[in-house]
Image (cartoon, rainbow, N blue to C red):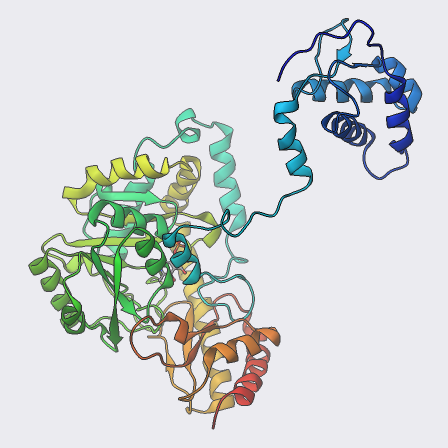
Length: 502
Ligand SMILES: Cc1ncc(COP(=O)(O)O)c(C=O)c1O
């Protein structure tokens, strides 16, 4: 931007009076100051008000337009702050030469449509977009994976939050300088030891902004581009997206009623990473047998692979106590344990954590702050208090009872419409179940028809990448009122009867 001295002859332009007066509408719904700012800015960008022109005094323009003088003063100040006019007390207000910048403003006013070549994304980006798995909607019967967020103890949370904000410590509001707030890591270590059989010290805990960040950190720190990784099939779409975009070759490995089929994987090739959800296989719900767990641990030890144990919703097991973690069984330190607050607090919190073997602690701490520059320490402090004061365990206990009732209501509705003709998979745990559909059904078409009828489901076939896909629907019940479950399922049952063979 160049400063042009005002031309000797330049006075305040009558043009300005006309220009603005013709267009300015004091009765418009747009606020006077916003309207005047816009008119002046556009006139300058289009050079109807050329560089060097002196604008009328604020008093004069206010009188001409019939607006308060303060309105004009604020508009001039804003234009000066944004570099459109010069500002100098008592020196008049002149239009500056903004020609090199003006394209920016014009482009913003008329967005150009980029050509296909300009908008082309990378090969890696194309693969990510083509195989994207995240759902476009997250609330409504029977969207899977969604906890009940309406019963979250908001008052307690607010009180704990207020307590932290009353005396906010500077180091809770700055960039995180470590792998998570020490107070939270201490609480988590105690909780994991007593509730999940995880063997760890607080130092081994790394707090991340969600499970995807943890999985990405694992891929970037423990594997190189082109390395192989086993992923369960069917399995969590997120691990494919994150690991493939980190350059890994994901090898789908089938699951059976005992979980990940290790021998099947061994036939595919030696992996650097192995993703498994042993407590509650996602999405089919198998609990990994003890024999399979020991086999997987022995395999990882022998082949120098890292097992990534995703313990995403193990707190919710109905009728039986939760199973201890795979990490707790591992004598060789080959397991990286992942867990999230998304299902036990609320997903929008975006906090998860990992437990890494001692030998990896330093690299992971450094990797975390280099890549993600963590923060949210104040929220972590609230969470630490929430756990320390017993609210966390109490909330989980209440939710487990609530979800157990909702699961029963959904099982009852399924039985009422289909008897036991359709298989149900869920391992009596988690926030969703999988309703199998008759062989030959197009579960994607059923899911789309259900959506048109107002019911959200996810088709099981979409979770397969290698094995022969079984048709079915993932149905989340945790966030659906018990009283509404029968009605919503009746709608879905009609869709299934209409769309499926037999
Ligand atoms: C298998 C599995 N792991 C982990 C997560 C949680 O991820 P996040 O911590 O990013 O919410 C989900 C969420 O749906 C999931 O289905």
